[in-house]
View 1 (tube, rainbow, N blue to C red):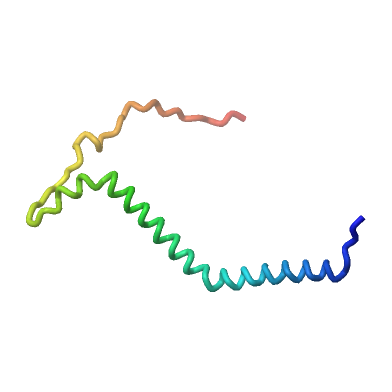
View 2 (view 1 turned 45 degrees about the horizontal axis):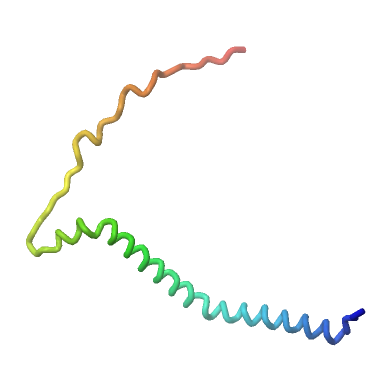
Length: 93
């Protein structure tokens, strides 16, 4: 049967502590840079998706001097008044 020696256990504990504190220090210095890079990539993905969905309508308005005004439909503001009836409840003691 194998037995763990004290020096082997101490080496393992020291290696784990060195790796832990090394990663902690590296992330403190390089964490903001990694976060900025990640946010820039996510922003590029968002812009790409936005331009794919809404890019066609905006590309036609790029001509200089051309003005286009989009209006909302008038029936979009009305609400349905027949949604149900109001019931007033009373407490019974």
